[in-house]
Length: 438
Image (cartoon, rainbow, N blue to C red; front, side):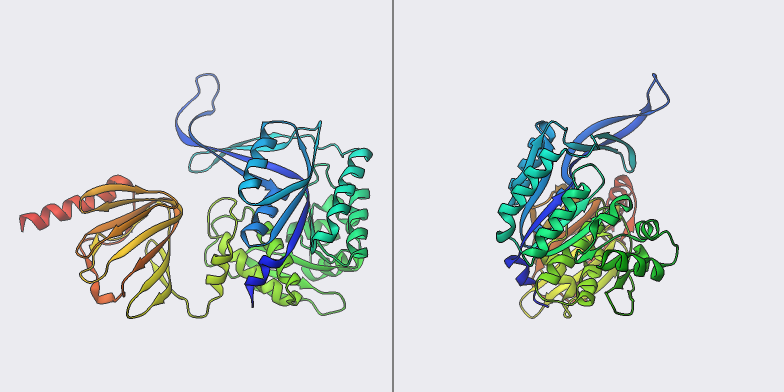
């Protein structure tokens, strides 16, 4: 399967654009004003949500992406445009209106504490519909597909949806969608609808998966793929027997945003000529990667390519897993995933030099008695005979590039484990003290 063809595709995402803001911090006391926790914020992060997250997924997979919808003239819009620009996402089909930009603010302290929504879910008016449709008509010749991302926030009205699908069909463009059950009847004649199981049951008003898929497919005259969490996916191709694909996830950490990853992968796979079943299998693989990581995340093309490589050897560890990309007489490359609050043994190699590169997350490392922190895009080189141990402050993915790896070239003083920072340091300090005394 040639994933490099993804970069040749141009996709327009239309729908409810949102900004997700996360407040990260610590809770150490309860408010004296009311029985609620006080979150002491130490970090703010921003991500596009809704149709914006779908656009980010497509861009991360290599496609040229345009995004369209409604935003306000406010600070949330400015932050969104900044992120879109950094991700090379074209915003020329976004219309500014009097409605505020939909924004969801979440308080996080090891878990989700609260959410605050800023939104106006009233449908856009006829004039705004016409302006959006005009923008889309001007872009239709430049694109290969349209994705509709409907969160029932007022952007995708029945009239707009009907006209977009008609326009796509007239211009021989693929059109796919994900929508809330309330609006599903508006999507007649599109190429593919992707609800989750709960949404499919609401749409069809039945509780049997095959019956639900058949009803939706026949009512919309469309292919349907229903995502089913740890049950995988069910494919309902027009005039064919339903097929079911089991889930690929080894461990489900967080399903947030997985639906966007699935729809983005499905659409690009169909565009490069794969069948619906082949595309579903690829999207299933993509979902297995994103649900094993925390939060709403995008899947990169390199991650998907790595997962599909038949030569990749996966080694389970107490702290997570290693994927061996290459190990020959001159070079070893690994992709490592370490779970939050887990740590490796305190060890060294007599023959192997290695360099760590953090892709996402945060590591703390004890290296020759020194304590270091390693953030995304930072590196650390380790020479031979240098003892070290790494611990994850959050779920972390990093790469290890080294000279040839052999299992015999591992000299460990402690065992890998899960525990607090204090426990981790204490184990190493105690073993070093014992070694020095002996």
